[in-house]
Image (spheres, rainbow, N blue to C red):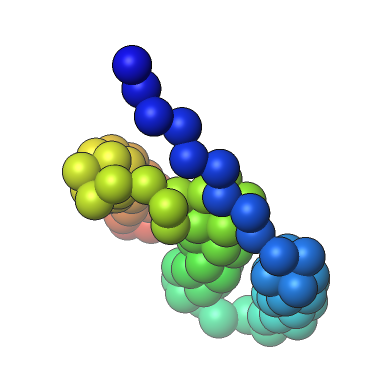
Length: 94
């Protein structure tokens, strides 16, 4: 039988993450006003990665999972990031 553990996250944590996501969305809009050249896509992807990490860690309860599951998720995301990064290098040097 599998054991199920309920994780009760306080509303204060949810509100803090929501406010952080709003602030990061504002930072995304603010940074988009400036032309950073080839760094535009990297800055946008960095902010989006931070936002998605907050959502996965708190709202999807990843911080309560076992270390093996975390490593599996992070390795899959790292492979995806490598493929996306290589695609951007291809587009950048055309």
